[in-house]
Length: 115
Image (cartoon, rainbow, N blue to C red):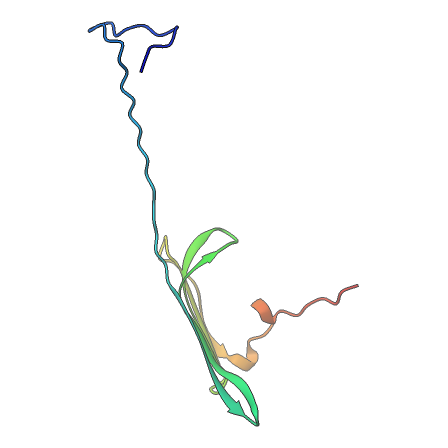
């Protein structure tokens, strides 16, 4: 590499060569998330009787990875949810309740009518 007009040779050795050090680093993370649904024919209709989600999920609100274990058991009328922050290990939600009492959350939120 040649010297630019405003550059001077090395004061100790007189060399006109320049060393350029470049460091490139990347970070790769692997996460997994398993979703399951169990269906059964009930009264000639196929209905979901059990849903489960286990693994890491990126929460877009704060761009943080969380471990999530969520279960909807329609037969046993059971809802459970455990959410742990992956960075701190802090438990954010630890909930066990009847599924019939679990409403107005997530996709089950009541929607305001359009005007």
